[in-house]
Image (cartoon, rainbow, N blue to C red; front, side):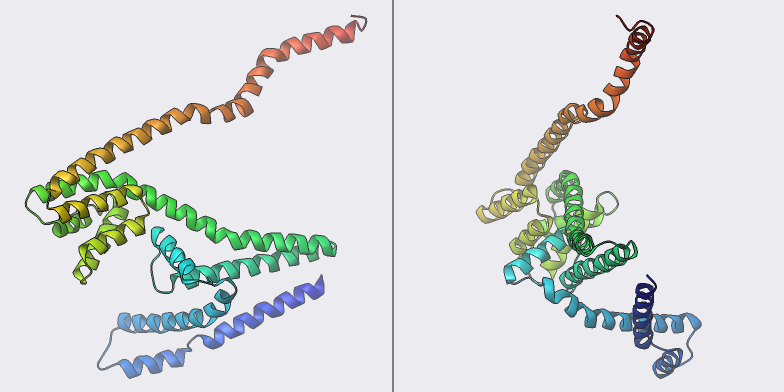
Length: 314
């Protein structure tokens, strides 16, 4: 036990020394600030420069460590990497290095939980079979935890987009009927829905930015449907593209789509309400029925036991 604690302490001290060596010293911060100063700076400006220096060093440390942690779990094909990026985008996690950081977190969590499990098992003097079993189980559980979290985050964000899509479509219909173009209507939805449905507004804003960057509207809308992962959004994009292609009224197509989505949302709410009765069966059987049975049958059972004790020949 003492040997294991000494080894763990040495590991912690080694990691702390490495991190301390990579962090900028106070003199380095002062030299950096002095070189960047072109005039008299306030204390707030100096604090901002110091913070930027620390952030840059921390970013460099993460960039150097991430490849070693990502290498064991790196996707083998471009299709798998594209699928991972789409999943992260659906969960609202964007950025060039987001997949690398996500994969690195799996490795770090797996190794960290394995080390903790080994320390605990060694402290409890378990045999070799249990030690390896618990450590491998902990590592596997921690390795899969980021995937579970990502699925839950993506599902939550998708549900938020689904709930706000009919309202966004109503605003888009009003904007198009008022004389705005489709791009301006999409931009208006992204600007006006920030306080009510921020997730939906963010997705429409990204589509607007892509259109402003020169990406064709159809491709930007397809990217919107891919990011959200909603069948309703794919249907909306298909209707808009067809209406634009054949020259039909986009406002009428959007209104029909909005009505259909509202009916679908009401049907889903009714379906969830109908499932409530079935879902209540489990708590009723496990928690409420035993209490009722004890209250109703308890006195009768006690009377029978009392009679049997007083007169065993019965």
